[in-house]
Image 1 (cartoon, rainbow, N blue to C red):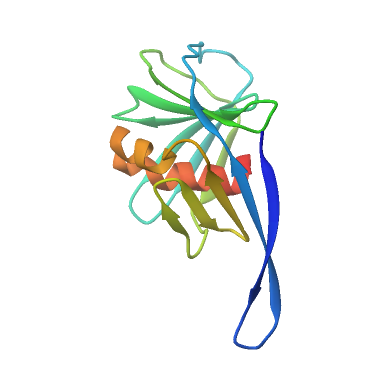
Image 2 (image 1 turned 180 degrees about the vertical axis):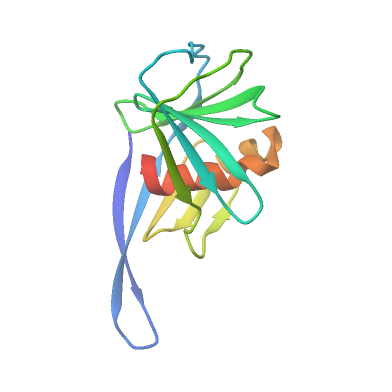
Length: 153
């Protein structure tokens, strides 16, 4: 179950700015599925160092790493919890729908269990999700934060 909280933040100009804080739980869920369905979208996320390949299948996102041999799947359940799974890929995948995005979130601050920026904060109550992602592969942190801020929450 998630909760949304709005906090007032005062700036030097004494203006108040609304910042939404979303508090959710995160769970590792063993959830193997096939990626060779037709109804998928390939998202190419470009930043200054890499171009990430992210597959969107229904409401799930698969971030490929390790030369496309492994993926981190993240999605939300009906209670707005974040679910994730690490899997392997040995298939050739074909796409006829490709979207290209630039990683341009601006200033993002994150801790082991929270992300702040994008006009909101996302805090994970039960797991240090960013730390877990960093341990899987530190290069996954940026695309995970992008998905959290732009697609999932």
